[in-house]
Image (tube, rainbow, N blue to C red; front, side):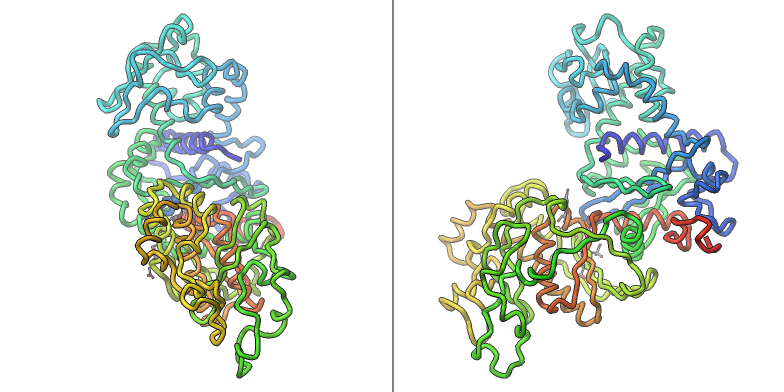
Length: 609
Ligand SMILES: Nc1ncnc2c1ncn2[C@@H]1O[C@H](COP(=O)(O)OP(=O)(O)OP(=O)(O)O)[C@@H](O)[C@H]1O
Ligand SMILES: CC(C)(CO)[C@@H](O)C(=O)NCCC(=O)O
């Protein structure tokens, strides 16, 4: 798995190489990122190893896609595969890194950076946008445990110069200096810094400049928040996935300006509302254009690409004997509940006893149910862990023709619901403002938690029945005539109308978080079901970063779809749940009419690629 350090280095190195290339090549035709396929119907965006000239042209190009949403900015980065005899600048730098590794392992540069991403936290305090020295004029780090290179004065970022200090103890006898030009990108910087440890000729001012780069680079590393595995595209390269909180956009742009010198004739593929909102700021601050694409079109394109080409990208939860098992089922059908025989809950479901209700990968399913739109939705499933590897079922879906039409329910800040008829034909059929940021905003306001991870952590431990008003709270038992079990949620957060229960609840943040999670998820599940019926689809693809590490929500949605469709509908999820839009933006920026087939370009693929 690529760590955040590595991702940033790739990013810096690749754009850095872009920058230097474009400077040297000024006046020449810009290379493949802006090459149109009208001149070549070959897969310029993911070059075939069988076409060395194309690979050469494309290999030094950065390939980024941004999806700038209301809450998160998703970034994807494609790194082409190394080809014999044709090396990208990035790969050359990588090779150089390998050569200097022994030095690094002695604990001075590269090894330190890899071992401790947070090392700067110990040396620098970020204060109102400026970096200042932490403590007096001495580094508090030990060599080999994340020490900064030896320098002898304080940090001063806000003044436009950065200086660092270190005690003699950690400055082994002499200052080490690196020429400024060597800091053009992250890899070059580290390689050359390592190499130049004995270069006593370099001036102090150059050294200061270098330190500034390093500080920017490490700050840049800290803004990423997600943790997604890269996708390997055999024979082509690797896609990396990262994201940061959109409210940090100005910081991102400032750091980008310092670190990524993208020339003005460049554009990076971007989508999401922020691609429009921040368009001018990208140009003003970072100095490059955004090549905008519609967010939902990008989403559909990205889903299609990932589901087809990323190994084990899409998955569903189990059916079979567990059908309905993770759901708190409504009352067992009796004569009273279905006088006219018209109830949906008939047939084999009758035969499933409470004891048979199990969650295969969960230790416990607590009984509770929620009735919405004529259906009872699952509630209060306890999840033990958010790692998808712990899920029961993971398999590859081939998005072939039989898969269409399908519904996309994208749970971002808000929720968009689309009916997709083919790769490039879709319609937004609905949406709701009760989405991922409703959950996060409410939980943050109610509990004081500071991040999505914290909110999820709380929710996993909570019991929503302490917060929600259940049918049993109103009826004193089941509402048999309408087939509503006493454990059905009658009103989310309804118990808080009672002053004492409210004040007790405010001391149980985990119960509040769980209730918020169920409220939002069940509402989305309910809408998804209605739209799936109206659109007459069998497959419902749930995407969006709300589902990141959110097994609880995914299970709720999966079981709800399965149960209420009597097994006729399938809830499907993506491992890179929130990044499909960014992948779509990346593909869009490459001007390829049919990137999916082109990806697989070889002799067996028809000539239109
Ligand atoms: N590290 C995180 N920080 C903040 N929110 C997160 C994080 N991880 C997951 N989330 C969840 O993901 C949601 C945002 O999802 P996503 O990135 O798909 O939407 P968006 O693109 O920002 O929003 P929109 O598409 O509506 O503009 C948040 O509201 C939150 O519920
Ligand atoms: C506004 C968007 C499309 C931005 O991604 C999304 O947040 C959304 O679909 N919100 C829900 C809007 C609605 O109520 O339909």
